[in-house]
Amino acid sequence: MGAFASVSDPEALKQHIAEEDSIGETFQVAAIWFGLAILSTVLASRLRISVALVEICVGVAAGAIASRFFSPGAMGADLPWLRFVASAGAVLLTFLAGTELDPTVLRLKRKEVLTVGFALRSTPRSGRRTSSKK
Image 1 (spheres, rainbow, N blue to C red):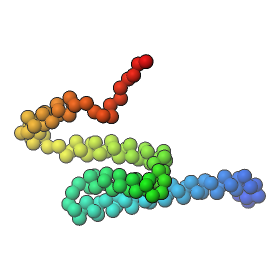
Image 2 (spheres, helix red, strand yellow):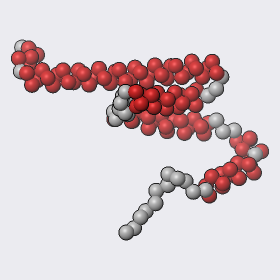
Image 3 (tube, helix red, strand yellow):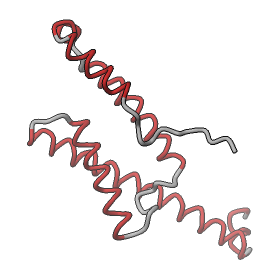
């Protein structure tokens, strides 16, 4: 009787419908992103380039298209679980990039690697935060 009693209460019914809409939206956003991941994998295998690179490009393009033609949050940019997944993906991508490095090649190309590293470290970055004391 508890389930039927909540149906007679209009506020409880509205809350129940809102929860179902939220769950449906979550599954819809997840399905879109998983579909894009599968598309990226197929595209990367056809083009014979890195899957991670294609996933980044497809993700950026999908986000830009969704923001332009729908709304800024259309692809779930404001969803906390998606932010968590994106952060975890960024960490995994960093580890993936580290596994791609070959120590023997780094030793052979030591001069070039150090030159690029020092050059990048010494150039000012436009995104660097500066503290402004007034």
